[in-house]
Length: 221
Image (tube, rainbow, N blue to C red):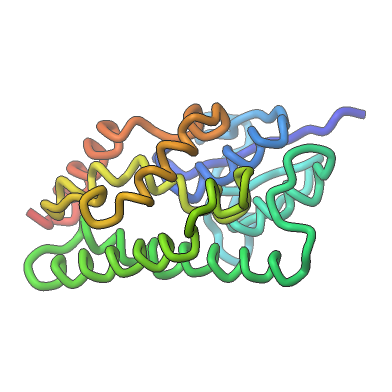
C-alpha cells in the first residue's frame, strides 16, 4: 500500500516552521496532500491530533499525526531513509546538528519576531541580538558549502526558511544583513539553487506584505 501523507500548515504559507517540513519532504521525494481549513479534516480534528501544543504544522502519515516542525523533519528523515539523509550518521554530529537547530528554533525565531513587532530601543536590541545569532551561525558554517557539509542537511533545512523573511527584517529594522553577515547570504543563495528550497520558500515581497498587515493588527506603527 502506498504511503498517504498529509501536511497541515499554518495560516501563512511563508511560516518558517511549515517551510522546513516542505523542504524535508521535497528532499526525500515524498508526495503529499495539503490539508487546509476548507478540507474535510477540520481544525478541531487537527487539534485532537496534536493535543499537547494544539497548533500546526502537522504531518499525518498513514493516519498517524506527528507535530512540531523539527520533530517532523527528524521523523521524515527516519521514515524515508532511502534518499537524501538530513541528519549525520555519526552520533556526535547528529547531536551537534540538533543543538544548532534548537538554537535556531528558540533564539533566532524569538529574536526575528521582535524585529518586526517592536520599535525604538527594543527593536535596536533585537537587531543586535539577531546579528550576534547570525555571526555565531557564520562561525559554525565556516568554509563548508552547507551546514551538512557538501550536501543540504538538517541545520540548513531548519535555518534557510528564514531567508525569505530577511527582506522584511531589513525593511522593518532599516539595516543590511548582507553587510553584517555576507557568508550567511552566500550560503542562503547556494541553498536557493536547490529546487527543494526555491519551490518551498515564499516570495520575500509577499512575506513583507504579510508583515505590514500584521504590524497594523498589532498596532506597531
